[in-house]
Image (tube, rainbow, N blue to C red):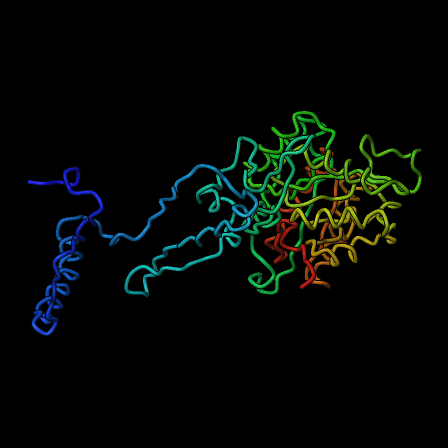
Length: 390
């Protein structure tokens, strides 16, 4: 057998050719091929569904934890906090076939009922945590995130003008509470519950005595020292709010005063005839009271006071004292002042009397209050008579 090495020189190598393959397309089973491909295409997803447990069908999935403790936007969380559900009160009426269910706004509940709601338990001094703000001087009142105000929360439940049946309403405010602890505790024990007590911010053990007063059912005010016309000859004491001072300085004094105790519905001026006559100085103070949900009582000692106009402008619940009852501390003079207070109440429908916590004043008040039923008059906490602009 010859190969390329043994071939004679000069002769060309014969060419190799591939065998020709001819396909007759006409004879191919095209229909069967197409059916087979279609079956294959359908069989693949069906087999995946049967053999693979994937409820997402192969779609891409990203897992995000929803219980993360990281607070991405704390401010948004505070603003978007849902309001607490309105409590439900169930009452039974013998004329009805079973109990009656009524949904009420928590702001309309007295404090004794509000404290049964979640997050509304007072501390040892009777202050509600959701109505408290921590400052450099201590805790001061504020409006809660649900819009509840200290004025509405700490007000003592009492008969109002609509339910009085036309009887005149009288509020009595005792000032200077807390300066003498023994005298204050004695007055708390002796006075009728509806008498309002105004505490001086410079008293000792103020939080404790104020808590005793609240536990005894009394409504509280806080005295704010303000500049009189004869200042400094007449000095209301440390942290007095002064005219012609930067608003920031007076608001700093106000914050210190408000932090001395808790559980009060509002403030009352101590002296302050000059300060209350200056809109530039009293205005920022009244605005601050409005933003904190507190009321303001003017003791009525100055006819030049602008407190009413500024209180109405800032939605601050307001009342003004009708008469100082014990300028003359004798029993006879005090009883005559009570007679004038009764005349004002009969004429105007209500009246506010202001008096000190002197023993003679307390004793005279007790005997006068005992006669109100015969006179068809009602003794009420001052918050009942405090009004704000609509």
